[in-house]
Image 1 (cartoon, rainbow, N blue to C red):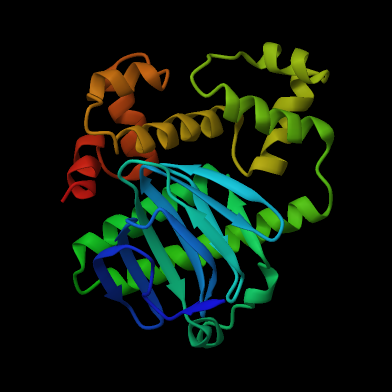
Image 2 (image 1 turned 120 degrees about the vertical axis):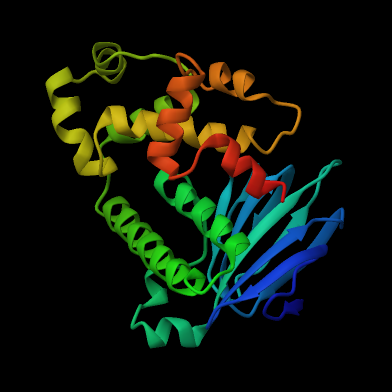
Length: 269
């Protein structure tokens, strides 16, 4: 089985940034199939454009733009790239980086398909920092990474204690119906619980209020659509369920710190 070193990925490397134990790599996938292999570092794969299929010992993930995976170091997997342009952003974390910051990587084991919109938005922020590449980039990236890893650990701890069935079902409903304007009473009816119960207990499992979570899902969807050059901002506005372009721009900046146009400029250089 092939062992890939730091910064080594199958495809054309567009950019590599080394930040004191953190390596950021912007890669265009050019190989149709990559057989079983593993990497020497724990790392994130974030799909910026296109599609890729990734399999490991337990699951197979169909990843499109906006998909986020985490692999523990030496976790074997394979990749299949469907026809078309595919671009990925990788964040590798050296063993010494974890030791230096006294963070136990063993809290995060195996391969993880990350669904939390907060974590994906943090990855987009790291991507934009990699393009700025100024004197504060290393500090900013390290700070964002620690926030991201802490939230991942928090999510795993919550899951280990067992989520109620309604929480699992609600997450599926919200992710599958991002553009729908579902009311609190409609959601509660579908879940078979009281609206007061849903509203009161939602932050306990999702770490924010219901309306805020839905807004983040809409922005997350918009981020993936901005990677499609043929999509106008007007198209994206209505495809993501925003009332108008002004509403879209306000929500996007509130969640993501930049405007949709500014993000698209960074994405396409």
